[in-house]
Amino acid sequence: QVQLQESGPGLVKPSQTLSLTCTVSGGSIAANNYWLAWIRQPPGKGLEWIGYYSVRTDISVYSPYFRSRAAISKDTSKNQITLYLMSVTTEDTAVYYCAAKTLYSGITNPTSYDYWGQGTQVTVSS
Image (cartoon, rainbow, N blue to C red; front, side):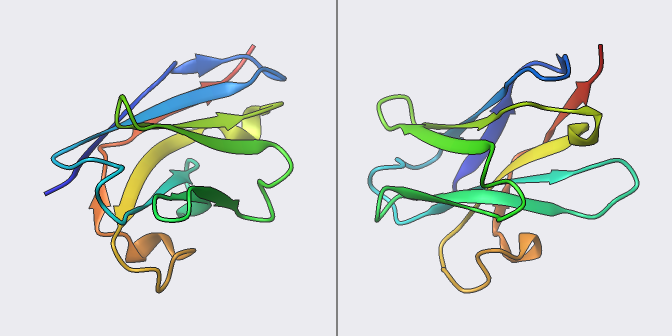
């Protein structure tokens, strides 16, 4: 069973770039047909889907809301994907999750993901 672990800075200053890494264990990214996503939950709000990386096609797709300032990269040698979110503001304060699913159906629906990391709190503040 795949396991996911997020890591990154807990505090980021406004206008900086947020970088979060998801380490996958229990299975190789390269050997399995996963869709690996980043999802966040701001305080008092629901889950927001940021985007996903497709292992099979080696492409990343983003929510229109984040497309202009988000990027997801992968490092198969380390079994990791990394989220970059540029020009952050206080509105980007949230718990950020790495999640995985094995079926494409419902790819933009956060509740459709099968596996989740524990989440990491990110606060944007000067």
